[in-house]
Image (cartoon, rainbow, N blue to C red):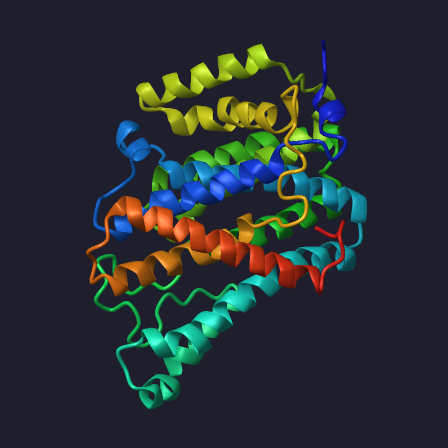
Length: 340
């Protein structure tokens, strides 16, 4: 059957919720290695650092994000409606976790007295994370942990994600989100990516943000050209083989944007059976992403860095799922269905 992406991705039947759930677990699994001083995860070692499980998960979030946010932009069209929907989805859970860590959990985790903790400017400076201003430390918190005192490392992706939202809106305003006009920016975008990647690599936050941002752009392209993209299992199998071969010869960063993203499209939309009911009531992946690292750091702190990598992962996964469910329940109280 010659099925196009537009046909299989047009409705609500897809595997996106379970994929995002697995991706959130992969983030926690990947972080359990450096947080317990065990280096990088097994995928990172196998690929010689080209990508690890955390990198796979971030790639998943940004690629599907580009696809879905482009769809949302073309549906909503107005700046107010578009950014209101984006902020309503991403900011309240972030603020909940940030304020909880700073004002509720922090006083119990810090090595300082309550008076010293609450009189420290760093306590309140940490609240800036709720508006994408990255502040990694809380006074006296996790200072003896093996990894260091970073309270919530994964937050660095959120400013990058919001900048991608802005990029999508700017491209819409410039009338670039059409099949004809998008071709005009594809080559310049790839050229800028290559130049920045070769000059910066992963030596800075901007360097680390390059691949996620480019995957977001590829996701946007896939949505715009959805009428022309066939979704077939045999193509996905070939693309998976290309991705593996790319890892083997050390050029995964060159093939990920075509081969790996096609595999992601097929997994989400092309399978014969869809697990579309998974997470239909409680979508916990975002809450897991926001709470996984702090929970893992608490476990390291409570055990004086004696917890194993596997127990760190398993226990943190359980508690982050519970935290994600609670955040999702609270989210339902201020956000109507269909506004994601």
